[in-house]
Image 1 (tube, rainbow, N blue to C red):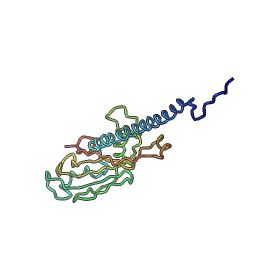
Image 2: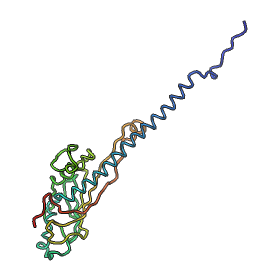
Image 3: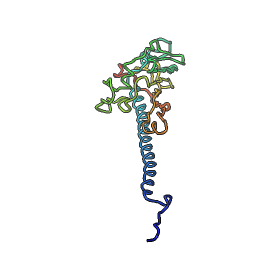
Image 4: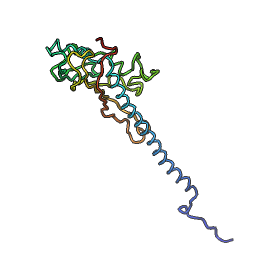
Length: 221
C-alpha cells in the first residue's frame, strides 16, 4: 500500500462559496437598507416641502397670526393716508416657537401685534381641527396632515407689504406671506447603528404666496 497523500490546508477550498456569499450578501444588505432609509428620508423631506405650500395657502385665506394685521384697512384713519392710496410698507414676523409677532421694519405697524394661537393652529392642524392626520378632505388639511411631525413651534410666518392692496381696502392689506419651517430633523435608524449618522437637519423650507382677504369670512362692504 502506497503512502497516503494529504492536501495542505491552504489548498482546501471547501466552504469557499459560503464565505463569498456571506461577504457579498453583507455588502448588498448594507447598500439596500441604506438606500431604502435614504429614500424614506427624501420622502419626508418632500412631504415637509409640500406642507409649507399648504400652510402658505391657508395663511393667505384665513385670519392672520398677527391679530391687528387685517385691521390695517383703516390706515387712512390712523395715519392720515388717503383711501385708495398705496398701502405703507411693513414686515411682520410671527414665530410659533416664541408665540410672538414682531414688526421689524416699515412705517406701518398694527397697534395690536398679539400672537393669534388659534390662527396658527388653523394653519398647522387644518380647519376645524386640533390634531394631525384627521382631515377628511383637502379643504380641512393642515400642514401636519401632510407631515405629522410639524408643530406650531416649527413654523414661522412673515407678512410683508410688497406694493399690493391700498389704504381702505375692505379685505385689509394684501401682503406677501412666506411660511417657513425650522428646527426639523429627519432621524436615521439603520445608518445610525452602522455609521453613527443619527439625523439630518432639514434646511429652511419656505413658500411665498400673495394674501387674499386675511379673514376666514367674506369681508363686509
